[in-house]
Figure 1: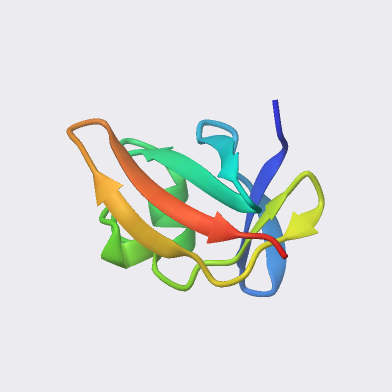
Figure 2: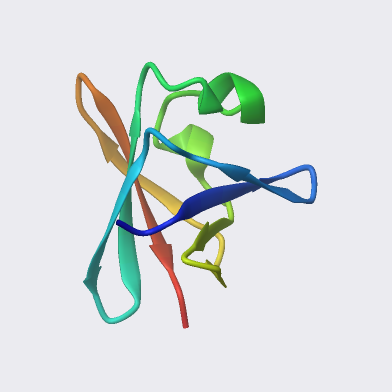
Length: 83
């Protein structure tokens, strides 16, 4: 399982209850539970738009600013790129 963190106030914060999977070509899908405490920690809404421009670290590799790409009744889905 990949180590996932999000940048908040210039530091990396672990996202222990989120999952990440490479979907191809350096693109990664991040699934953040709606009930995750990370929304309050980062002051981001539990919506795709709330996670636009977030920067993540996946196994120590920093992503480009992410884009919220969807949601369902349990998760927010965010897409991030690593070049």
